[in-house]
Image (cartoon, rainbow, N blue to C red; front, side):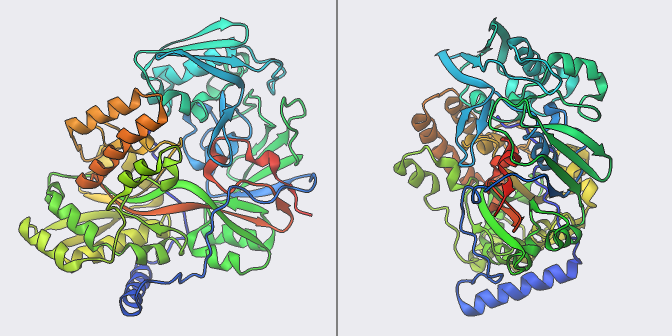
Length: 550
């Protein structure tokens, strides 16, 4: 099961006045109502690709804009965009994501599965750590056990809850034994959950590991200077076992303000960036100084339900809000026109290994239409909820958050609900994901979820009884049993057939309200190319391929 992140749903963006956001959304909704299906108001073509053109040569360095400074680069707590965007180039895992979101060997040259509860990883020979040592099975056992150690408070600990032992079974072989069959565990070995660092290096750093000094990993770059509050530098590691990085250095500059980040891209102060503010899409696209590209993000935008003790405890009210929500209007303004309205919890890309029949069953009836206010209003009336008050959290972390909250409020008003906005500071918004106290008095909030693996179960597990992101305590014993059945199946076709049923059952019960699919965006100026466009940058050394564009 995916480990929940306190940050994973928050995409930082430019602070906007709430009245302006509401006006923009209202104007667009009116346009859509008068002119038929909404057009792409931003003019953005978000055709998806896997990567940008290959680099034509080496460069001395390039600068990358990052919306926040990582609090640490310890791989055990690497669960947010800033940490993983940097760390994926420094610390490698047993397996690796590709730009097309498939899995390939990483530090393990292969993995075997001799029985349903055993995974054997055969390691590459001669892999060097940045601190001078050579990788052995002892380092892998140590690295995985750090994730399992309750004293570390590892973000990926849930991935290892089914693990009974991690043992060295040869100089370059590690065997993982599980309590029960678990189809998800091997997939997570391509994420930071499967990262490997030098045992000697980590122990020498002690409590400072991840915040100062080196990381003692194996990637194509090693950690260089870290100027707190300003930037992180990565230096090319000439002892790398794989293909040599094309750039001698990467400089990550911390630019929390979205306007400053956009201006840095336009001026050439930064050569590129992921997580582009949606309000800057059109400006960057028309600038002529570079190229804005889109790739699969495995990301969905949702309204998370946090309280089912009030009006939202009645499924009819949740369905009413879903029916009344102007998804197309939100996509056009809140996502800068780059996105797809959806009534499904998962992206279609997450079902890549499913048969056409399974995909059809998973998504049948989940394509949203235009808002149906009359039907929604009738549902609210039948539930006896007309005039009931509900609170949705909002924040200036980005217009995707603020405008979705505004859209929910507008939908509620039209169907007889009194939905109030509670503004939360950006640095406090992330507490909604980890602290039940922070959610007190809040009935729902905007949540963007990205899959850490290419399997729908990554998201669907969140609705199981007791799951970390099951904020409102939704419970369905049949659903729980289906999750357990799917988790135990290695055969992806059989597993996905069960997951199709889970997907439909979740859509029926609406523990969250799905809104849109959202692609990954990357901007590169004319000097560089070679970066992947997909969310694979979180778990593969993407910066190694970035080099000269001409």
